[in-house]
Length: 238
Figure (cartoon, rainbow, N blue to C red):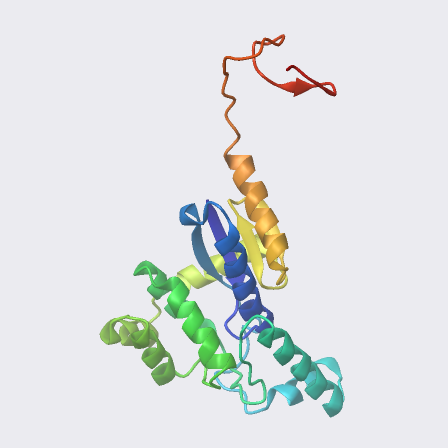
């Protein structure tokens, strides 16, 4: 079974959603048969490489909040993140363009390290206050998860995996995805938002049942009309 997850590395709900999905997957009986693919989604494709403004100020300008309201919103998000074991420092994040970060995730996925790269980028941004666009920073993070420094540098210096990022974003648009995280299971089930682990687990189970219908096994035993041992119409053959 395949799960595709559209998200951005500067989306606070996406990191929380990652943890909730991991919780659901750990409780799913067929987790070893689930393939997870991270898909690109830029919350602000037009963002410059670096925005010299704290998150609270960005919230003030974008949503017309007062400073107190913006700080309170950051505090609530920090508390929600702590509830799933994450440490957010939203007053220290370096807001910036994430296109190159998404290209690195695709490069890492080509080496079986997509999830590790995604995790490292999220932690670097939300917990460590590191840039999502600075090439030196991105290179160091990629090397940490096991990628070759030369290959990373060449990818960032050129346009490697740019087509893959744009393809992900085009698919998101075709699916009507307007917010992230967004989960697509076996191209048949969609789940929007950082839903509770129980909701995500239920979606996994429904998708599995839909693609793996139960086989009927005939047995010998008590005689019923169809020769099987069963209960029907409120009665049981005994």
